[in-house]
Length: 299
Image (cartoon, rainbow, N blue to C red; front, side, top):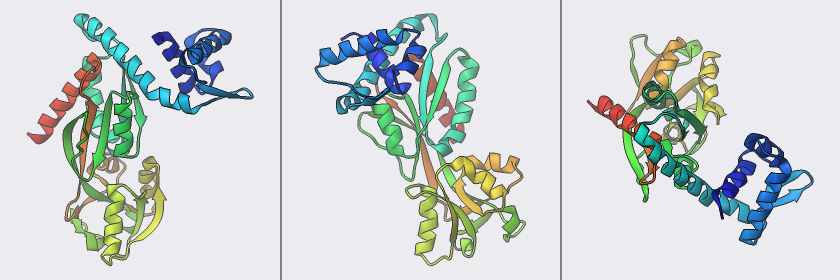
């Protein structure tokens, strides 16, 4: 099996069909179909079910995605290792991040990285749980992952660098700001009677709201939001307050909103994840940037 066939297979997966994949690969669609057919013959199983003009992954095709990505990633690592003798002049680095770490510290780290390696293209994809980040790093879809968790992340076979702890804050709805003008912090009990924009269940932010409810604090969840990019606009529109990690504070302040620390303090532990070996030079360089960020944050 040659890597060209795996590259073509992943192109069909990533571009949702043969036509778009052929356009991306700059080859004729019949040539792509022949290559995939050859790969299927070599493996002895169909990788796609042809339904009309659509190509739907078979179970065997789904199973091949992860190993195929690892093979291509290792090939990239080998090529990059040779190229690194001339310095990191180009290439691509795939990163996956959860929403809050994607604001900070990812923004600061990308800014630092691109100043030193301006020719490296960064591709940042989204995840909503630590498990999604871990799986993406493990199966080779991403080289670098940023995750936030209520506790430290420990995963066999995955390198974890703890970056920072982000305390939870309340982003205050300016149309319902009943807190003292000089206050910089509130107790969880102070959320009683307040309308809250909440993240979906499973997040630390939602846990704090649910924990307050469980202890008799009369919190009203007015909106439950999956896409956290909607949260600041909803606060600005006067819909409610929002419980978020402190990474959101600078953006909230620039929008004219004030924030309050919620006590007792709960922290979101933010870490960067990577495979322990076969990393591309670009990924290794990004990890160096992450380590420098950690030193600055903890100094």
